[in-house]
Length: 285
Length: 320
Image (cartoon, rainbow over all chains, first blue to last red; front, top):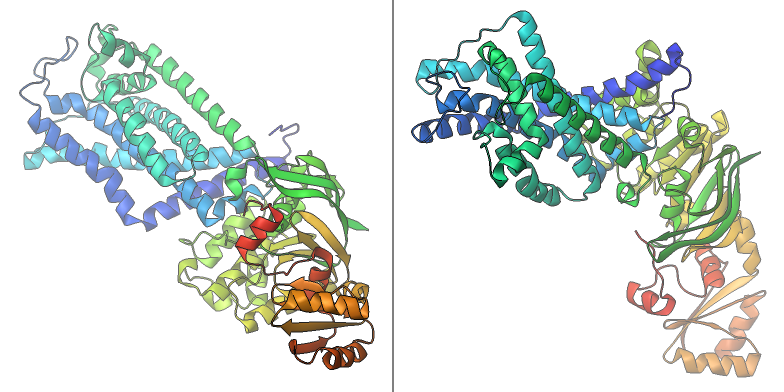
């Protein structure tokens, strides 16, 4: 991984594998229609059903603009859920790649381990962004069939760019987390188990589903959850009206959100790189 | 010129030993076969040579580079074909090759030309746009080899290359490997458990229970046994063995229900044996030693032993 001199040839040798691994990820995804449906359909259904079911019992947090419905509150959370699901589905393929032998072929190629990690992560991140973008378009359209609130987008081009960029950062971190899990496991069943006891609770306790309470143990768990800052940051970037609202436990400031998400991303990527760098028996079974 | 130098290499999976102090060399431009039963350690050795497993103890150099410290350079110069296909089954043959080329830093017109060349050589041109999933085992194996050859490696490592191939396809594969060796001077290392495949190698290393038990050309190995090989079936082989020993001063090897004797002028012994023990011997055959006989002579057991007896007798298996 030590790149001492960046000659053009070296640069090609570094970027070409990243590009080709990303390209493969996209190609595979679009050849499996069921994955598109699974990663987008379930969150969409959740959004409509929970939105309808919890409308009555929802207590909007203080910072919320008056008349905010649960479905509006839930919108950024569902976007993060789509990103999480897509990240999971694209990294779980590492286990299949290993079983089918494809991964071994990549491991004996003269590809730096960093390039291997980055290729897989950018593939997963791009897919997550594509799926999330679909939801950002389809979600508001549900208003016209009576299944969703009226969501007007009031973002400037720079605002859009900031939101998509931030979402990309969240996606990159989650893909790196999924990657590290998949790299250490030798069965997809194991991955599903970790998903139900770790990834789903992480999402539920991120402020996606309900606001972070002011005090109590739940409050602490949610404040320590790195994804809380991803959801809150996205929430702020999605509606410019929240930009002026001062920071609270259920809505930290944008700079806190960015710093926490960036730190989370760096940590998970480092973990993924470290795991990949070891020559391990698990990869040659 | 040495392509691979293995010096005192040992490897264990946890506390299960897989390789035990293996030392040998592979010369440039030869086809070298690693022959042994499943569990003999050849796949472990293959994985160390292909830079997938770390060197635990000992020293291994491939193309004059140390595997432990210089794997990046080695990876650029070797081609590896695994037993389990490493093709992406949801991609077409050509897409797989493009992907492979990119991993090795090839692109554009040069990559396209190489892909066309490999596809033509391996007779895959008309199937290049087929999904790998839809190909037969033989065609998949050919695509796998095209993949391993794409970057013109100086050394090609193949793990059980003829797995799943019918005899015709196997024949073609070996013709292609021999052509590659003679035309481009590529060093080829194959692992195999098939005797007839081992016969086609220039030199062989016999691996059993993690140890290198013999090394040489197929002819040299057979010559080490010398002479002829007598295989005797009997109702009570143990008793017969004892009586042969008493009468002729020979110690036959007892292998299950058969006895085996290696010696020069075997036809004379055969006549004497049949005259001496007409009742006890059910059948006897005389032949030139095969590689299987070499294996038996070197290890004292058959190449294909039942798993159970082998475990009990040898108390050692490796992780395959």
